[in-house]
Image (cartoon, rainbow, N blue to C red):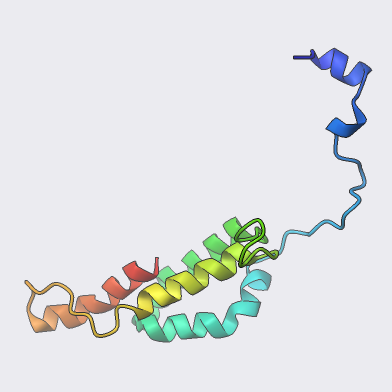
Length: 130
């Protein structure tokens, strides 16, 4: 391997990304900007999860914002579905929604009382979403 001094003394033009970049760059977006196009899907997720409002605001909303900050505009794949900027976020929201939706009609915690099952059912649905 070349030493640092050798690399800078004889730079290989094919080894470095030109600046400014030839392709337009994407700017990092705020989590509100990232989640705004998914408002309808997030509303469907909220209904599907049917968590108490306080729990939704305390757990789900911050989790969505943290994940949006992480995923930002990363594509979901190189050349398959969701390969556009923001595809990872879109794919993740859809997969979580369908996972939570699949819990409809399922009976969880059969060893618990019916009253207890009614209380914890939204938590199982939330676990399937995550």
